[in-house]
Image (tube, helix red, strand yellow):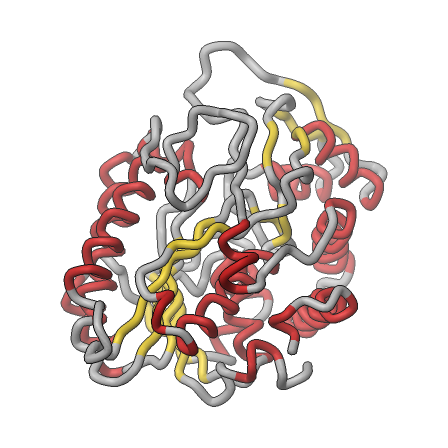
Length: 368
């Protein structure tokens, strides 16, 4: 992979990823390895079985510390010992339906866990650029038809969305109270995205992994909201945005404290039905059935982001169209289930290289 990506800023740098064992965190770790970074990870557990982290043997390729971000003293000691050049905070309780079942765990992890990372960063004594990942669900979603901008109100009707809005308020507080001015060694920014897909996601209550797991067994997947519309995107899309944001934050202190949306084009909103029918092009034997019921717990039908700020200030825009997103996702799972003896890390790296090549042919700025 070419060394001009992101101005080569991550090569030989210590990069800490919290939540590195999760879906996004494992893909980000793999990409950082390809960029020549010295990757560190902090996570309290491996969240799924199977998992991308284990399948790609990432524990053998990075320095991984098992720790819970709710345990402040241990977290602070680890960050003080690592003294990272870059930090990407992804550790979270990431599921809406679980947040209804365990609201206190969700609030504690996503709000206080974020506060603990921020507080620990106050002990870092050399330049560190930290990107905090929240969610598109941090916005007060009134289900209008246009995308939410970074200046729109935060909020949330469910515990998960509330936890992400709360995390944003904590981040803003620390940005203005502790990490402002040229004398500070730490600079922070926020990335907001949602509804990502890609190989290696086995989280519960997510449409793509639920479908793949069922189809791999020859079963039909049960769909509770086929009418729901989402701005679907491949996991590498927001990750390219986070990496670009980290680069620009290191190069331009004016971005300190700023939030950025990362999402697909405004016209790339598709229903769950359209998603499943497109997946079936690459997994033709897949079947699904509508089991939607009235009066189920609230889950927003429409939520999309306006990404103009990322375009104008970072030069970032998405790379893949909807069909390419689906094809790359299903190809990864096909490879995993049909080639159990092959090296998943190699295939993951090949897909990252494939994504970079798409970006290069489309002249995206972060490719160099």
